[in-house]
Amino acid sequence: MVDSSVQGDNDDGQPIVRDDMMIGAVEGDHGGTESLEVLVMALEALHEEAKSLGLEVSWLKTKVQVFGGLLDETVQSVHACGEDIEILESFAYLGSAVNNDGGSCQEVLRRIGIAHGVMDSLSGSIWRCQYPCSRTKIRIFKLLRIPVLIYGCETWTLNSDLKRRIDAFGNKCLRRIMGYRSDDYVSNQLLHHETESRPLTCIVRQCQLRLYGHVARYPETDPSHQVVSVRYNPAQRGGGQGGAHKARGWGKLRFLVESCLGHEVSSGSGAAACCDPTKGLFRFVALFFMCLLGFGSYFCYDTPGSLQDHIKEDMNVNTLQFASLYSLYSWPNVVLCFVGGFLIDRVFGIRWGTIIFSSIVTVGQFVYAMGALVNQFWIMQLGRFIFGIGGESLAVAQNTYTVSWFKGKELNTVFGLQLSMARVGSTVNFLSMVPLYNWVQTFSDGYKALGYSLLFAGITCVFSLACALILGVFDRKRSKALHLEAATSGEKVKLTDVLTFPLSFWLISVICVSYYVAIFPFIGLAK
Figure: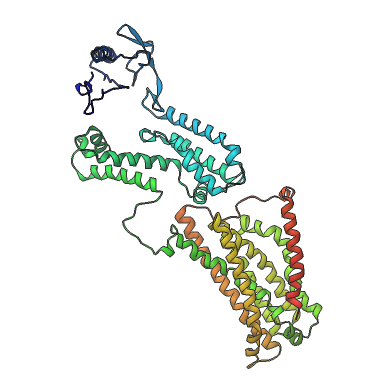
């Protein structure tokens, strides 16, 4: 039972030691009784060979494990060399649990339990700590916690239930790290996209494929290579040399590769990177349209301020009436700030919500311009009221797109770009509207010139509406390619949440209100 190569010394003159040994006895023609006799003979031969080498077998550490129910359950031990050797159903060897049914259920559940304990041990120091960012916590989870779970997974045989348990554990850990509550609706696809991770079963497949690639480089005469070749090439099992068998075998391997990578293995690159939702460039093309969503709204918002003197003169109104163009914009948003997000999440959806609110802004601007064309100031006021209904809700939709497409450190940069583009719209308005009005006066005058100038300004709203349509197509294509849900605001908002806001939030709110109360009237009325 001990190969002759283990005897004597090696090339360096050091004695060769075999610390662990494994002996197998297969089922004979007479069932388990014959295999038990063969096992006893093998153990006795091992004892004799070890004695001749000056070695001693530790019978206390020697265990017998029976696979496939070869022995009756009444047999509790094996008697060999004057010692009783215990028969076990399962035992841990090199950190892995080996069960007598040949399955991986016990080992998988054991590894999940160990990994769960490790997660709990770091709850207070890392997961609940506010200082490491979510990105850092995800890295810690990937580098330190996942290896605890998948240790020895190369030999796992997984059924659908075990796969579900493994993925459920991974998703639960990610939701815990990201701070999602039990009532937050976040799909698993969106969760993996936000954390830049994959299901744990994909990682298990990857480890198994790495082992396959390693064993496949063994010589063809090696038993491990032969086993793997038969596993993925059924034609070698005696089923014929037909191409169908080989195709099915390597097709199964191809399926494992695709599952590991998370997408199909394509033979070439089809669409350009800017039109491929799986590429990073696609997001930044979408960012261009996100930034321009509010350009028309901010451009037209300040048209009364840039044309203040001309509006007063052409429409024959005083300062109080002129100021109503700003107040009528603001009054709808006293209510819409509470229901705008609700309408986007529960009624319209982000795509249609953006298009609808952008359309309302466009309609409001053209009604405002038509009021000047027909010399009816109350129509101008109505147009500003309609404009206000869509203006701030469009900003909510713009922010919803942002938090859906970008995460982490990118988010602050994107918010900054959007705010900069919005202020560019206001700046361009103050620089261009008076020259535009003067140019229109060359072929029209009075309130007609004012109306045509405001109509030209409305073109920017049409441009922003086109951006909303394009962005809706982009978001639909992205959701379909990445198997994501349509973008939402990300959480359910309740009025009682106001009670949980920290003092710092209220201080910042007071600062913002104090600033806008002073600066907006100055921009709109000062000359």
